[in-house]
Structures are given as structure tokens and as C-alpha cells.
Image (cartoon, rainbow over all chains, first blue to last red; front, side, top):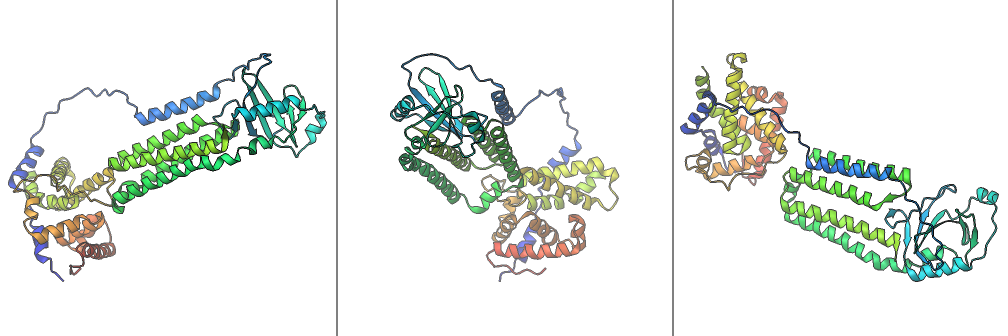
Length: 310
Length: 164
């Protein structure tokens, strides 16, 4: 064992130099003339807060906007351009919307398959279904189908059982030769190929995380990231984003992808801003940004895999 | 009166701040700030309690600084890259190799451990005086010092034998 008594004594003898003492004393005792500037301070708003307010305003405005009038044409050569399918348990409402960007909603764009569907609809026999039957039936497919034609006209259908479709505009009921679910299921073989990209981005995010961890020692990382304020701010942002998305889903039954992306972007920016403010080194900030980007791309790939069929 | 108090206590306050902050310039600035406050409030300070008041003020300044910087747990930054005046306190510490090792080991301890080690081992305050400065009870001071010395021993690679 080594005795450090000499070293303690050495540390005890630490002194300010005479020059340092004089300088301090001079600063304290000599009154300094402070130039008085006008106290009027321009009102400032932090950039991140401004961004937050802007995105929230866009979200609120997106609620206020009214649906545009649907075009009405009698083009006989029109073909089906896109089909949107939205699960809806309520018989009284129709919630499918004409955009591939609504989540959770299936979007079909494959021309060949849609041409087949058009042929099926064209040759489908009319079936009579009474209003009473429709009101009382419980075991229906719970799917809203919105068909958008090349001329912009739309048809709104509700799927009854066994490929029977009810046009809610004309109250016409047709029975397709094949079940409507076949259209949905016919894309299943594409899923593994599309999912590969999803796995790539998940792996990339893990790899970035691993490299960042490897390059920065544990203590240093903990010192930067594990502050209570950071955890609280993170939790508040997550709860806020999840709350906004859940509220939109409750009100509109579907969420526009741009809202999800906007909120995620906002969350990512605030996350990186906060990390920067906490003094994290640029390398770790970059890793954090790449991880956030990977998450966004993973979500996009998963969304395209399960919801957009082309 | 003020100058007298300044010359009497400035070394103690600077030393305390230097070991607490591990930064000579900051220690110098905070020593100045401590005495500016003393200068401002000296009429309200009881006679004989000046040093305790100065120590508390210096400690509050240092803790406020760490709170602002969110460095309350770990303070790994040592300004080794900065050039030091050959006559500066830093240069003085590095003159003795073992003292430098000890200084670096102390600087890697967490703030409360560093605080209690500075007061008890460097400033050589009694348990009661340490209690007064830190606002802790006797048991807490003893226990924290015990843990701090264990942590210091670990920092020094086990080569440390120190009595409480």
C-alpha cells in the first residue's frame, strides 16, 4: 500500500498567485462603469417552439378543410384507377377515402387486377337485398370499398358476405363471381419481397446504434443521455404525439400519413435539439438522426408492404 | 475590513473551488463572485461566521454551475488541452507526480464524494465543521467519506491506504 500523505499535503498547499489575488481584489473593489443599454428586448420565440406551433396549426387546419365536390361524368370508357378498402364496423357510415396516404386503409393500384375486378363488376348479376335484411344482418364483411375511376368519378360500396357488394349511392346490390377478399389476398406473395427492405432498415438502425455505443464509452453516454429532464421531455413528446394521433383516429377513423410523418419529424427534431442542448458530441447526434431516419423508413416500408398494393 | 477578510480567506475558497470544479479559470471567477457577494452582504453576516458563509456561497455557486451544465453526476472534463501559465496552480499541482495522480483521481469522483474529501482531507475540517458547511448530519458525513475513500481507492487502482 502506498501512503499519499505527502500528496495530500501538496494539494493542501495550493495557492492563488499574488497576481491572481490582486486581479480579483481589483475587480471587486474597483467599481466598473456598466454601459446601460435600453432594456427593451425584442420578443423572441425559440425555433423549435415555432416549428411545433406551425405543425400543430397545419394539423388543426387539416381538420377544418372541407371535402371537395366529386366530379360527375358519364364517360363510358372509364376504367378503375384505384380501389381503397377500409375496415368499418358501422353499417351507417362510409369512411374509406380517396388517397393511398390514409392509415389504416388498403390501396390497390395494379391495373391488371383492377381490370379483372371491373369485368367482374360489369358482369355481376343484380341481387335483391331488402333494407330490413341489411339493417338486421350482423355477420357482414365490415369493409368499405371506394372505387375511383380514371375520369375521377367514385363509387362507394359496402361488402356484404360472399362477394356481395352494396352500392351505397344507388342502393344497387351485385354479386361478384369471386369473393372480394381474393383481390386483397392475391397480393400476399409480394409481402416477403417488400419486407426485405424493412429488415434492412431495422438492421441499419441497430448497426448505427451499435457503432455509436462502441465509439462512445458507457459512462460518457450515460452522462449525456440519461438526464431526468431528457427522459421527462421524451415521455411528454411521446404521449403528446400518441395522444394527437389517437384523437385524430377517434374523430376521423383514419390518419393521413403526412400527419404521422410531421409528428415524427417534430419528435425527431426535438429529440436531436435536446441532445444538442445537453452537449452531446456531433457524432452521437448524427447517429441519433440516422436511427430516427431508419425508423421512419422502416415505418414507410411496413406501410407500403401491408397497405399499398401495386 | 473587507480586504482583511479577502486576504484571510481567498486561498481557502479558491482551493475549495479549484478541487470542486477542476478548472482554474472557473475557480478564479467563482472566487471573485463569492467575494463580490460577501462584499455586498457583509453587513448581514455575523462576526466569526465569515468563512462558513464564504464556503456555503462558493459551494452553492459550484453546484449551480453543475446544475446548469447538467454535470451533477459525472465531471470527466479536465482542461488538459489548455495551456497553463508556468506559475499557475495547475502547473504547481503537476510538479509532484503522486499529487497529480491523486488530483486526477479526486476529479473523477462524483460531486458529493469530491466535496466531502476536499473538506475533510484537504481543508482538514473537523466532522462538525464539515456538517455545518454541507448541511448534513454527522452520520452522513462519516458514511459519505467512507464511500468516497473506497471510490478513491478504486480510482487509484487499489494503491491507497487512508484512515477515516
